[in-house]
Image (tube, rainbow, N blue to C red; front, side):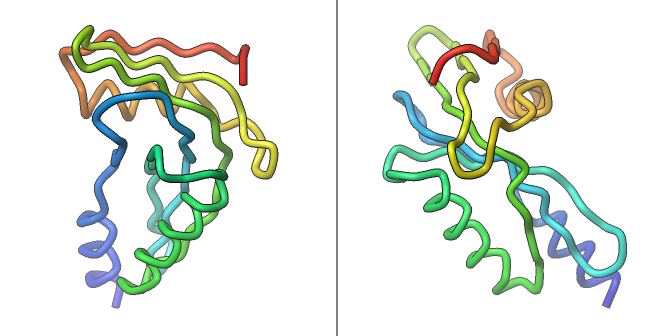
Length: 122
């Protein structure tokens, strides 16, 4: 079971965000069986609320036997033509995500981007 959980966990992308625009995001801790866990970033323009992002992520992960908790949220400004992503803001429902963690995840996914973050703004 632990091996299956590890495999399921490794199959979960660290970052899934829209390719352009300003949108809400959530930082989610995904857990497999045992003590295995990792944090992932999900951000999409279709989400009216941070809870929408978390619910869809939670449902998708549950199909693979994974559970998750929301560590917080914020907003992303993704400007592909400038190769820039700015992380800021907070979620009213979940609180502010650790933008430093989110930024590290984004840097791994977008190594040729300038990625910045700030605690200001909504």
